[in-house]
Amino acid sequence: MHRARIADKAAKLRLDEINRIKARLNVAGLTLLAIDREYGLPRGTAGNTLQQANLAGERAIAAALKTRPHLLWRSRYHPDGQRRAPQPPENYQRPPNMEKRRLESSGTREAA
Image (cartoon, rainbow, N blue to C red; front, side):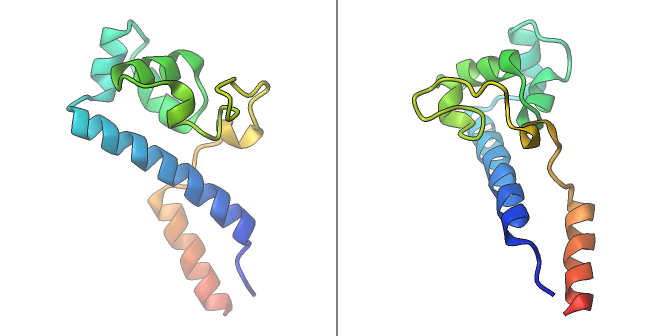
């Protein structure tokens, strides 16, 4: 009857993390493509890094924002700043897109 709150909470935390980083990039006037170019990353690396763990992309985005990676990605780093090794499996899964979230929410309303 009820949605799985643990899964919803984890997905929401990941989406909040992504949105927080995107907002900081926007305020700084940076684009993900510009970060790829400036730090010599293959095209699309910075964009993929928002959704999936990638050490080079995390470091480049953090450097562009003049901060450290562990302050941006709390799910990928221990509180002391050490990177989690191995990364939790959910860090390699893309968060649900808007369409999937809408389908899930409409499915739960029908079941209620």
